Length: 314
Image 1 (cartoon, rainbow, N blue to C red):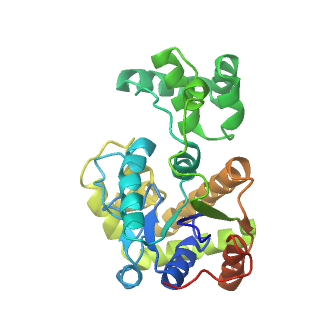
Image 2: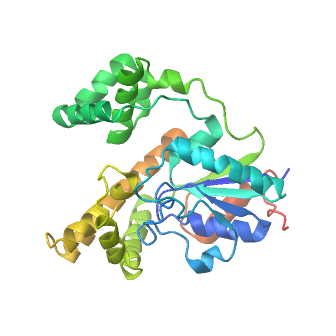
């Protein structure tokens, strides 16, 4: 059976967007964004959103639909993505969900718990304590009450660690207990998946080159417009790699070359976190382990129900 939905996950600069576009051309599919930063209208260059030429080659959904002042959660994305996927299916077309935000894929394939919101004042207090005590102490406190969550959260993932602590304090119940009450958003057998996991050094080189392309595409002007809005620095759009670094340059604090060096370093760290997520959370997904487009295409064909046969054209 031809999969109704394809899931393509991978770190930044791994070629997943190009692979999704090729698959869309071959199958008549429509592309749905699963990248937390490509949601925002404020981030065109810095999120490497599809170009107008790419958008013209296949229908695209949930790209540039959110305002930077409106911080989308995983739940918000899932609520928006589900009717889009249902509409695509209702028109008899396959869908390709592509991006680098692992939690979005987890919500689709495993479900999303109805976790209560953490009040802002409590969230601020949890983050302040984290800053004062450090990661090791915060992780140790979480491990006492929610060892499953502590074991699952990767080293250095401050956001998920403080969220787990916040949920515990706000609800009096471990995050892992809430998450155990979930159901997948996608029907069993309706989807196939592939994860792009290229060699790290080659990926880092690609990340460096992409930053240069972002500058050429107007990243500095984009950051200037974004910082001029005076948004809360805790919003996702303000945490995008490049925003803080290029804003520091625009403010006259550092040179452009220093900003680029800082952004390259942070991009590599971001890619490393994404690769760690793939290994820990998507270990059973078929892999494409090369940056070569033809090798990636062969891998996605192998992941289909009928290995070795190209997806049928529509």
